[in-house]
Length: 416
Image 1 (spheres, rainbow, N blue to C red):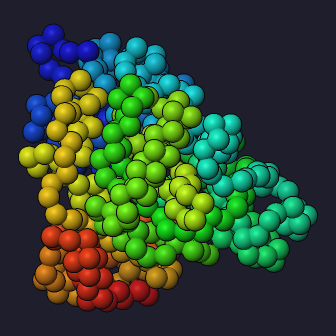
Image 2 (tube, one colour):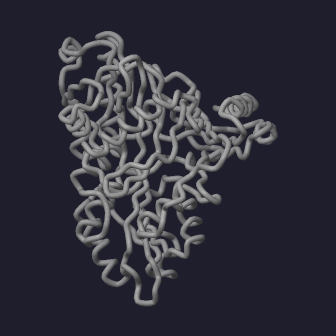
Image 3 (cartoon, one colour):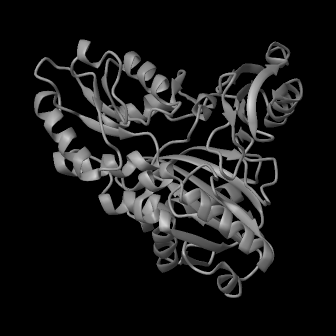
């Protein structure tokens, strides 16, 4: 819907802890699109710029839908764009209420709820790990005897590998189950996840190389924007992601099989429109769909992607959401990558040394430390943040990977 004065207005749903807002706002300025920020905290200057932000109580899905509908009566919206798994469901509900384009509520819920996702993928015959689910109040020692090993325990609706633990025997299962129950019992998680915080998913561990796929759905058809290699093995016990490099170095037929698996998964979940981010594995049995989310890549990782004449991923998403052309999806020549700087241990960040030396490494574009000094660091599986991001761009994936590792080696963390 367009404002009477010709303004195209988009509601961007973004949690206050997200990194994504600035990239979307920059893309909106380049397109002449007006962005309204819908966040779970009131903006400081909201009363001085009416119609540019709205405070929403994200856990109250019905309340959020009503608030957005009330807002849209005064400030008509052309689209609602989510930035993470939680807001993907909120966007679907609000879009349905306003008859705006977007995914159905059922499909958005399926992409967020890992158990529902597994059920739909199984029915559709798409390779994904065999699974069981258990209540958090179950006796872990009894449950441990019902599990095949190795397995992975995980929450139903958290992202970024938070709470995901590989277990190789019953004792390991009991310890991991208790650790995950403790995490899910924190007020932050129970408020955000509701009933899903009382369930734990247990699925068979799938070996193999892992990739991340970034795509854009139009009328149910998937266009693959990027396929990222993850050169560091993700074998557990925790699954902390570090390096993403694109384009993938896997054989062309393997890449096609992975892309086809992702497209079939999107159809099985009922996703029709907008960005998707998928995690897949490849082994001797072929492709496996591990996760699929109805949103774009998280953190600052989208900075690795440029399309056509320097367009960002966020610009493509806004173009797609508002009905502008998205025909030129060719990635820029060369290779790019990002390293999500891992947190080695729990403690308070006192200092990060060597940042300038890391930035001076050949092919490094930027080093961003995203956690300020004096803040507590919490590693996986309980943590949900990275220390920062290192970006590189070069002629080949091999050079990108070498530069990222070299830059990381120059950083020294002082943790108290």
